[in-house]
Length: 158
Image: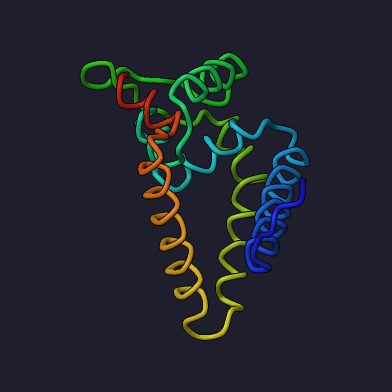
């Protein structure tokens, strides 16, 4: 079956998959899983003592995935969890975790920052605006078709 799709969609799909491959390779070369990589990245962005649920919500990860990854990271000595209010858990990096972040996460964040810095004036903001529009329209179309996102379904019931 051959599907007629817009040239823009083909290029978008190819670029999106290439970007996902680049991030997968980045995590792989860092020696950690994708989910662990995302958690470390989030902990840097959100700061010490961030909440497990905030990572899941902001990064659109299932709480189950975040929880199981955090347990592994805790056993490996990269993080420790502190009881917060209710079921909330505050997340903290251990010295070992801080070292890993400094060596493997921060350099990538620096690289990403420099990429936006190398874009022409306003291009970074325009890129984000267009991507937000695409995501909003995609989400709307999914809802019109009665398709709820798994992470939203799971995270709204936990």
